[in-house]
Length: 312
Image 1 (cartoon, rainbow, N blue to C red):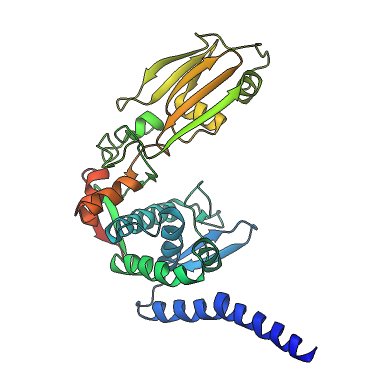
Image 2 (cartoon, rainbow, N blue to C red):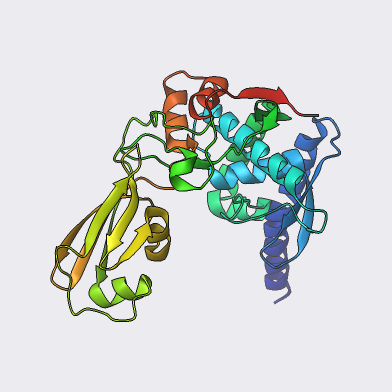
């Protein structure tokens, strides 16, 4: 019995060593190579706690969450600079009454901790991927994107799909010179194609109709306007008009580039791409990196007319 207890205790200690102690030591060693930084990011955690992290440490967690670690180093560098620019602009604009700068979700930027990285990649791949991402972040330390001397809204998305990227004004109200239509840079434009089916009751309830028809008719959905890139900008559903982004949100669709088929009380939507389509396509950035483009060329492609500056 004593030997069994000893084995169990040894196993628990080994797990603690692998998951907590060793990652902590490695992160400490990696962090010691960087010069001391004063800039701190106030992070709103999922449990409502506020955690304060050094900027560059925070960026490692964002890149790990937002971009596949298997991507090319130049794509990871581009992601690091975009993420850093995003949080610096948010921090500059944060009111003094706000107690945090960003959260850990898609409302701002997704961020994951060391423990979440280990859970995502496994203990073996953690060492490889964390080191790879840290090198990308370290090599771009302090770099951010500006336009006319001001930090930009460095928005990004997973995949533009079969369309060019969108102008910011086609998705949101603002129109800025650096967020315009450019080729996605993606080699496989049909990488993300999703088929989503709804019955007539679910479809109209999600769109907040009070009176639910018994079945669909061929003219229930009519596209009124498309963006310059070709995505749905506005559409009419019976007697109501929706923006493409509102329609996407209510039905939880991955993008606003979609087609549909109606059959009685069923509708099937075929959705292309993943994300709002504005700014940098992450899969496009990786394809450009594979084609030999460096991070500066990648960023200049998606954010037209920008400069890369060292922020102090």
